[in-house]
Image (tube, rainbow, N blue to C red; front, side):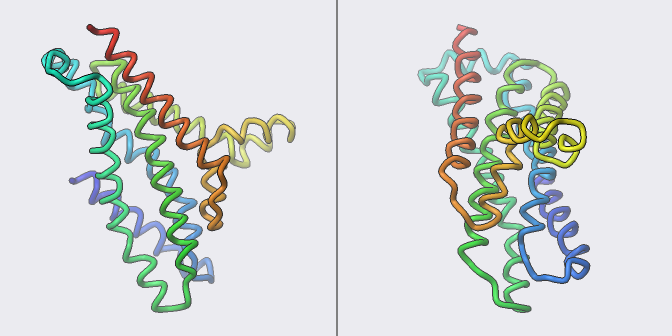
Length: 215
């Protein structure tokens, strides 16, 4: 709960402090900021989900229960996505406040939040996988943060400055930040939807396979 509250505080503060500098009442800058906040927030929530259970040997007890590895991972995933959803609720005051200042396009905001939730789901899947690979939650946290950071950097100006445009265009497709841009604009692009869902499912399957090997 502390992590969730901290997320809400930072997300609201970082957006509001630059709101009047932007000169426009729009949520786009908020959604553009979210990947970098989720890069830390999601691994912080996820890091001990499996690593701590492996360290204390409670995972072995869990695996002996009459439930499958798939049920275990899906239960943890749904718990985490619910916590992220609650964290997003702490930011709902932003669009409400902006709507009092100017007319807001509601579908664009809703699609933006949908994209943010899909982005968080893919980060959760990735972070769960790293949590299953170690008994040290700090290692799981750092591995997830570094991996997410590298993926996000693929769609930034940093790669444009050091790589040819054709290479950069190819690599940016694998960046979550690149696909989030469509949702920020209020567009539900099926390619971006497929990217987030496939990334989430891929890492969840890899985590399930890792648990099955422990039997």
